[in-house]
Amino acid sequence: MSGRFSKVVSAVAILAFCWYMLGLVRVALRLLYPTTHIPLIKPLPKLPEGWPVHRLAWREPFEYEASMYVSEMESFIDTPKFFNSSSRVWHLDPQNLSQKRPRYSSRLEIDIPSALRTTNSTSLYIFLFVQKAGQSSPHPNTSDPLMAYARAQLINIRPRKINREHSLIDGKGADVHVLNSEAGQEEYNTGPWVPHGKSKLNWEIVLEDNQFDKLRIPPDIVPYLRMKKDKQLRNLNYIPLLWENPLAARGEHWVPLTNQSSVSAEVPLEASTIDIDVTLRGIGLGWFRLSNCVYQGLLELRSPRALIQFTESDVDSLKEMVYEVNPTMLGITMIAMALHMLFEFLAYKEEVSFWSKKDGANLQGISRSSIFMSLASAWISLFYIMDRRSETNIVVLLGSAVGALVEGWKATKVLHIGDLWFTLRTGYRRQDTQKQSKKKNTKGRTGKGAPPTVPKPTAESSLRERVQREVDRQTAWYMVRVCIPLMVAYATFSLVYQQYESYLSWILNISLVTVYSLEFIQMWPQLLINHKLKTVDMLPLTAFLYRFLLTFIDDLYALVVPMPLIERIGTLRDDVVFVVLCYQWFKFPRRKPVNDSEKDEESKKND
Image 1: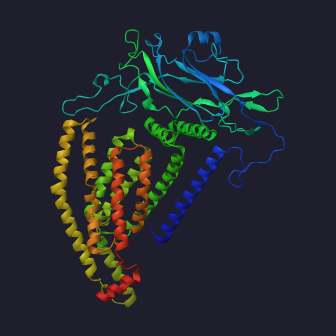
Image 2 (image 1 turned 60 degrees about the vertical axis):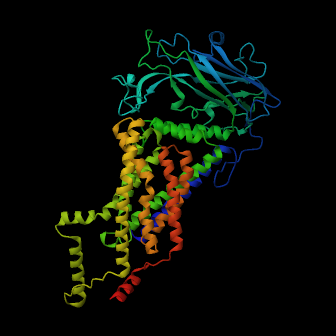
Image 3 (image 1 turned 60 degrees about the horizontal axis):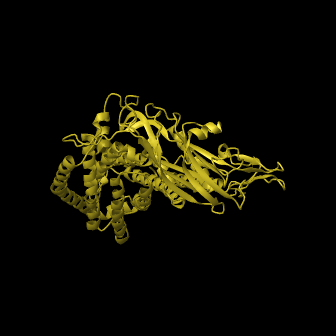
């Protein structure tokens, strides 16, 4: 990769990052301030004076109360029948509208009707009614024009998750009684489709008085908006937005109601109640629109026409990252994620550019053992993440896959795979063809076939080669006497006392734990070579600079993005290693010639 082309690629990546950040700012402004005019970024056409506006129908002073009812009916159109067959499970006393961000929580125990316990029916719903105080006795006044309501489903048919982890010696610990031919095969850890009950329910209501110009209501909130005309029939006031946030409930919040593979009159549901944590809180319009936007995007990622098919675990990890994090922290995380992708791309680009110029003849000062251990670490980490697919975000998986490919390509440089392939393909050695080419060029210039001058090895290159071999021998000594006994001891302990899904999972786990536990040995050879040679010129410093910035971004990234615990611990290891490397970078002076003319001068001095 030429220097000019490398700079162009870096410039394009930085411009793409700036464009992404500008788009992120525009999206944030449109979600939070839909009616605000911002030149160039969010322009809006002017409207005539006195143009009708939409306002909140609830005006202070205003008091409201809320009630929740559980019913087998899908709607309350037939009001008498609905309230005769339903039961009230929660009630909120009158509250003042002046509190725009209230929060109320409760834990409910809901009885499952006997008719539903013998079938696979999902007809169990919970309704929330929020209206003016005094309108809910003896039951909510459904004809109240100021009433806000929402509905959520409490039972759903889902594949029951199976705990396949067990002791590999005696087989204890797994759900063996459900591992039969009826078990579903859509995911490795799923079983038969059975009724599940929801254990978490988050209602959200927007009590802010957001004003929208007529015909300028954001289209994403139109399906959730209910209007109320005033007496002049000019301004259309709207009822507060109320919904169940679909990002709150993830797969883990659906609890199986039976341990059997089917439900019938002979084999009813084992559970007779559903325990559910209910929350009602006030939010801003921006959070409502952001949640809806993210949810619609997640639906697209799960659709068959999506370019990359996301699994349920991928969607749940994104839900957790968005909903369970403070909005400020979420914004910081989005920026950190963009910086992570930018620096990771630039680091890989610099590594490819650096190693594309390398072959077996100019690898002095670079530790072979570090390269091979990095290769093993990258691929073992990739296989472990793939084995723990349900716990890992797809962004982490893709980054690990790219890193493993780059490490494999670097190893081919050390093993001379390119020269071997050239010899097998042409029948000649690459070194012989290069000598013949140089001989022809010399003959064309001088008229004689004098052999080209072969530069003698310098004292610097000999020293680097000697130090490299010495450090690699020391690394092999420590690997044999330290790594192998530790690996055998840990493998024996985990096999006896821990549970795994299969022997493959056991092998991947102990391999990755061993690699991460001895990562300092992996980086130690190169750090020791740098110390003995008093230089770091043999390394791709630009790539290491990007890696240095990337490690601190990964610290924040690891706190939010779901990944295995061992991967999180690995980020702390990288911090220490790169701090030591940066110390060597600033301490040791440059000793390597920076251009071809300096190389020629040095070779003439050696002659």
